[in-house]
Structures are given as C-alpha cells and as structure tokens.
Image (cartoon, rainbow, N blue to C red; front, side, top):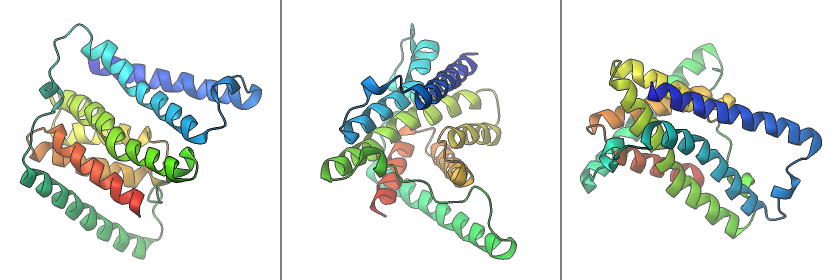
Length: 222
C-alpha cells in the first residue's frame, strides 16, 4: 500500500507540474522564478525534479518510521566488488548492444533505441555550467534515483512478486519518468541491467549507485 501511495504521489506531482508548465507556456506565470543565469535555472529544475521522488517517499514510506540506510540497500562494499559490478554492467551493456545492432541490421530501426538527450544544454554553456551538470549527473542524480528505484521501489515489489516481475515493473517506470521517449527502450534495458546488479550484490543500492555514477560520467565524457 505504501508503494502504491508513493507512486501515486509521484505521478500526481508530475501531472500537476506538467499542467503548470503548460499554463506557463501560455501565460508566463512563473517568470519570477526564471533568472538570467541558465546554470541556476538548471539547478532549480533538477531540485524540482528530485523532489518529485523524495517528497512522496518521505511522506508515505519514511515519516514516522525509524529508517536506517540499510533499509534502502545502502551498505558498504569492497573495492573489488565495485570493480566487478562495473565490469559486469558494461559487459551486459556491450552484449545487449551487439544483439540490438544485429536485430536492427536485419529488421531496420527499432523504436525507442535513439540516443539520449544531453543534459548539458539545460545548464547553459561555459565551465561553471559543465561542472554543475557534472556534479548533478555524476554525484547527485544516481544517488537519488537508485535510492528511489532500487532501494525502495524494486525492493518493495520483490517482497510481493518475483524478481523478474519486479524488475520489469521498476524498469518500465524508470524509463517512463525520464521523459525521453525516443530512447525509452534503451533506458528500460539499462534499468534491467542495474536491477540485476542490485540483485547479485545482495540487494545493494551502494553497488548500483557506483555503476550509475560511472555510466553517467562516461556518457558525459562522450
């Protein structure tokens, strides 16, 4: 029930924000929140996005409970475990990329396998914008997303369903909320891999955070 409440809260907040964005596009009612500093605007946009995860999680799953980091899979891992997680993740990514490339070669383009949009333009141009985007994409976003999607959502679903069913549901929601529909299938597959890394590391969100950080860093460098 808590999981359903959190998801309903998350989607409700996003629905409200989308409605407000549509109103703003027509009447510019939020101009007072927009500054001439695009980097600052980008930070505000990310904070708003993160709160759509964290507010429902706090009110429906955390508030009133004695919660420990381990409840969300945050536990120490060894250096070699981290390295193994990264290598396993990228091995699976490479394998699935080759399979998709072969399928594409024979049947043509597959919807949802496009390139993900870069977040850099959101923060503007210049060194400050690049550093800010890097800190958010590499150091902050993976922590927020992994705690929500693996530490809470996947872990909660696994208490009622099989790992496969839980993984598919989690990945579908993860891909949907990225709002990048031209690459939604690729994001879905990436989430399935991260779910697998979570499982083989003893339900460790720490391991998936490390892989997520490295993957985002590689994407930014490319």
